[in-house]
Length: 288
Image (tube, rainbow, N blue to C red; front, side, top):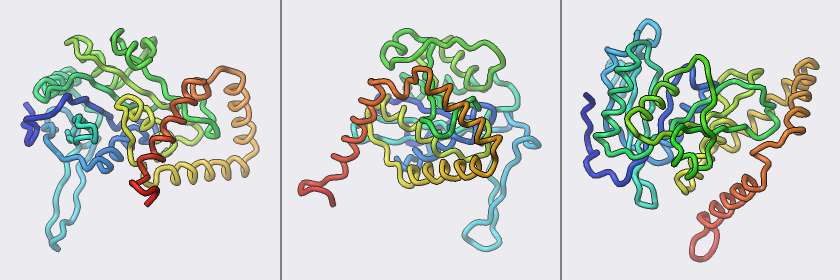
């Protein structure tokens, strides 16, 4: 059982989760959770005992030298819980994890029990996969849920995937089995640039969280990093005709289909997000 500290009075908490590993192409989802942890100044409230779930020869611990010379500290791979209070008064629990190497059912049971302890009402998992997505277009993000009420509320699709799954799929199923509403957002990272990081995909996932929670997330340097990432891939394509031809074929395929990212509803949401950022950047006398 996880022991939580400073989590007794959370207000209507929603759980946002990601897992490093198979569900985290180019570290896009874990990057989004790491960004939120910093942007919201989230505090650590608890962590899983890793001994039962991780093979430390696969996911090795790290050692670092502390501020005091000669003093080192070992950090174990595990799943940690952070809490943050948003400006609207609602609390968010951020669960930053590593896909376990063993005992997945017991792992999920412990996560479900943690949700009960914290009073979590909704679970949102972030994930990323490699796909046939051109880097020059908006990153596709597909939101799915098995829960009909949550699908209607968030405008999600029913889950239709059949095949091998990772811990995100297993955890989603575990939530469904106990009646805990859960949804998952998957970003498609171009597989021809699969190496991490992919700030453009991280930004796309953060945009979905803004919509779900109706908040503005401080983005810091992420937009500049996303532009630099795209410019770098442009240079790669310019130097390799085979890559350039492949990207062009992906662009043509995308442009001939109806993209959710280009729909009127998506454009309206993006404009609303822009206005909200602009207004929040102004003080009583205008921009500071």
